[in-house]
Image (tube, rainbow, N blue to C red; front, side, top):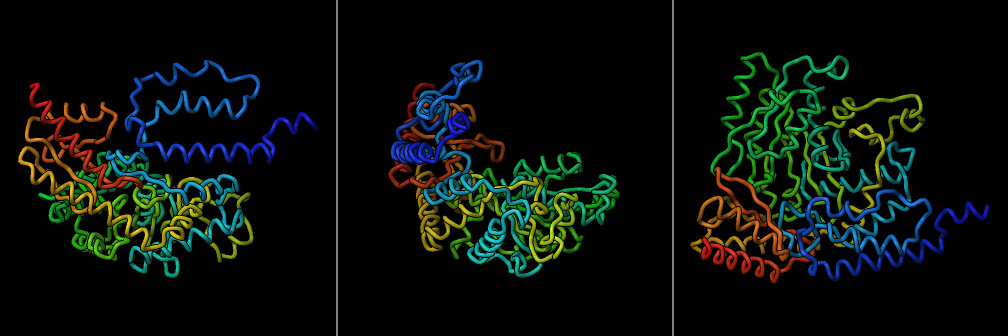
Amino acid sequence: MDKQKSLHMTPAEFRKTGYAVIDWIADYYENVDSYPVLSQVTPGAIKSRLPDAPPDSGESMETIIHDLNQLIIPGITHWQSPNFFGYFPCNTSGPAILADLISSGLGINGMLWSTSPACTELETHVLDWLADMLDLPDRFKSTGTGGGVIQDTASSSSLCALIAARERATKGKSNEIGCRDKMTVYASSQAHSSIEKAVMVAGLGRKNLRFINVDDSFAMNPDDLQDKIEQDIKDGYIPVYVCATVGTTSSTAFDPLKKIGAICGIYNIWLHVDAAMAGTAALCPEYRYIQEGLELADSYTFNPHKWMLTNFDCSCFYVADRNELINSLSVLPEYLKNQATQSGAVFDYRDWHIPLGRRFRSLKLWSVIRYYGVEGLRKYIRRHVALGQEFAGWVEANDRFQLMAPAPLNLVCFRYRASDKFNELLLADLNSSGNLYLTHTKLSGKYTLRLCIGQVHTTGKHVRQAWKMITEAAEKLEATI
């Protein structure tokens, strides 16, 4: 018995160590801007410092935390740094972290309503809250035919939407006998790469993905979409799915949902809308223009784990007809049958996504919304958009730089008026300094720098410092070439 007790952490030990871990996290956030934003280690450096074999005997948490500081932190790229301007934000907050800790502590599996009713019912309710907060069409709420579910990422949301679209088009035959029809999928050339992966995973095949041309603002061209659909129909294909993007990854372009939705309505094609990062902006009434036409969509997704203070992973996925989604993903073995499910009075979210098991993700979302309130979240978004607009103004006012795309929200795409090689060297120089982190894309065939403002603790001071470092590095580089 004594040996069994010593094997596990006692409540007293957990309490003591838990306080130490909370202190560690608090210290990390107090000092995060002192770390190099981009990890400075070389490939293999972390692994080379780890033991070849695991310990035979257990070690203390003090030793583990010591090694966390010595071995792991040097290999971290600090996404929560106020000087992180790369990709899109992946931010978090105190209320989210603490609620996620509680979720881990509860250790439940919310695969069925009966396996933790609170997990299911809180998720349904919070996603209905969010639908109202974002002013989404009523058809996406659980009070009607639709509803929302929390996925891990927008990639999973897009995949589930595609599977539902496939099954609607084939009346469930694809799930029974496999994909034997020639089905086609449509997305702009600026859509996220997860659409291409979804086509592969869903068994439709890469060759059946049609990339639609974009206009000068990098938004989908509806005329080209309709032309490609009509040509595919003539060639014997079945168009099943269009992905429109609200805020493309490269440049935050907004596809014209109304025109795209009207085309999908003509041909009875599933319209999925991916608003992974930009969707959060619709918390503010003045930015809701980005989702005009959303009432024509069959499904919609956005990620609170990007720009809504809710730590990864948390992707909200809505459908207008939940039965189409459930019917495409439901498998009910004997060991999952239960009275609540058979009554039809509950949601079993394991039928709304790929995995069977699921974490209590809604707890952190609930915590964030209650802690900040709608007005607090709006203030947060408006501050980042204002900083983005200010930075874009500096770029426009400097004749050595140029904007490469419209900057409607918090992402600015720009480049130095020089060669691609120059801009590539400029980015490498900036990131190697450790003082900030930017990423790049290609727009109109030109190497383009991206600066995205969305981290929790980023202020005007950090953005001004970034612009100063960018201009000084460009001048220095130009002098050496």
